[in-house]
Length: 381
Ligand SMILES: [Zn+2]
Image (cartoon, helix red, strand yellow):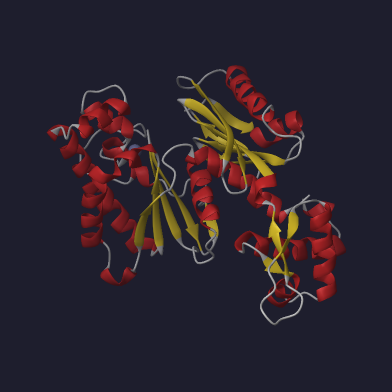
């Protein structure tokens, strides 16, 4: 990307990023306030805003005059409802896709089930089918900014390569290149849990979220770390694998080959298996009847989770822990125990608080969509 820009273009790009970032965080803001907060000259701001208006990324909002004052201020706002992204989650069990706007309002969604790793052409064929259906729902008047993928497995987000995903059967596959060649749109690719974390943080619109731990409780258990404002991926893109933290000596066997991992005890798969049921919906029916075994397993899961999160919080000192994934549909059964052991594990002065995600479903595909918006803000076009 660097080679495409000369120094003047870089400066302009950086200035444009500053303006768009303010518009991302503020509901509406005046040109004067943009100039003050970005420390750009009024003329530079006028030029940049004019370009944004021309491209229909922003619009002017005419406010009511204040009593006794002169001209009412004209504010600017990002046309969030006009900017669209496609987000796709690819896991070993399903491919889910959403067409969403900048505020994560879903215009359309699609899902195809599948079972474990398949041949590349079959998997890519299914992804193409989902994208085709989503593309068919893009209104002419709205602007599709790109496609984001969240793939279960080891993903190098810088190059958009799925390095190792035995779940879906992709190895050293340059997904970004493949999708860009097919659709001619900007493409972002990341691990599905990091995509979820990106969405959680992006959609909260909160600059104070600089150190955040996101936990994803679903068929598997994953985590992602935002440290000092950046998604931390580790030396080999594997940071955040909290699902393989050991919580029981000689505990249940885990798919990683070890025993006693958090995931082997508290994932949807582990809980469903422990209750001899075949789907999470069946587990939810048991919980709805307050079935003793089901409640007891969920309480135990919450207790283990609290210990794992408390230990992690002691190591990293995040300001917030966000918990998402479909298992949070049963949060009322496991969160009290989780909060209890968390409080007994974490250093009392750490001030880390826990919150549930707003989305129990689709949150990895929504997160994948936010990868597109985030990239667009860095390289608007
Ligand atoms: Zn494991």
